View 1 (tube, rainbow, N blue to C red):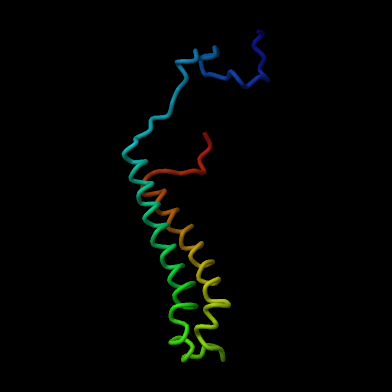
View 2 (cartoon, rainbow, N blue to C red):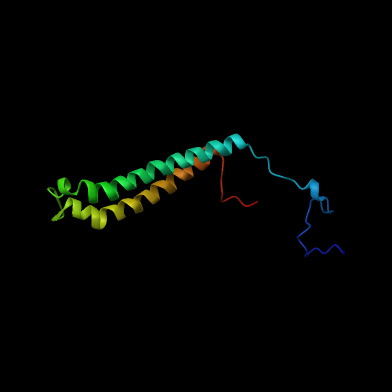
Length: 115
């Protein structure tokens, strides 16, 4: 096979393609990855619990108590059932995004890096 400068499949600094068992592998610390995923799952559990409490708790379980309070002229339990839980969910998406960015920095894990 002729070495073609336009063929980038075999690009290697030495000019020759590496043997199959000599391909450079990134160094992965599995303890850091495990800690990252545990923190990620813990964050998801907290945020989903908040969402469940707001969406199910405020609009179903505590609706009678919350309906005694008015919010923009509507009973608060009704408002949570119609709009509040959706607004809470969207806010939690932004909170998750922000906290995941901080978590990626803390664990030095960045999925936006180009290999």
